[in-house]
Image (cartoon, rainbow, N blue to C red):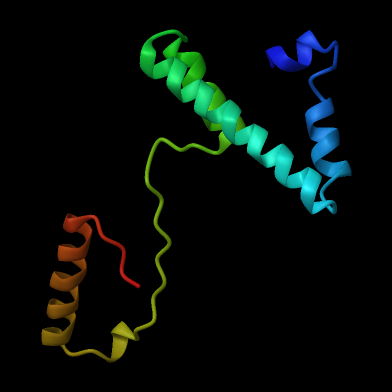
Length: 106
């Protein structure tokens, strides 16, 4: 962003550095800390109203892996075909309660 512009560096340099220094833990960690600071700056500016909200959302989604919704991975470990009607009903109620509570089963 601005920091790269001020140093007369092209925007792709960041990706190049990430790839080049991926095997150097010290440099790679420094790059990741800088990314965290950039992410925090976007969030702070958006919350203070100093940045355009739409653009802030765009940057957070595309550069910092933010999402609009919660995504849940579902793993089915039970054989529902072998369950009785009563067991299926109990399982349905259990899963419905988990879904309503918004919790994720371990």
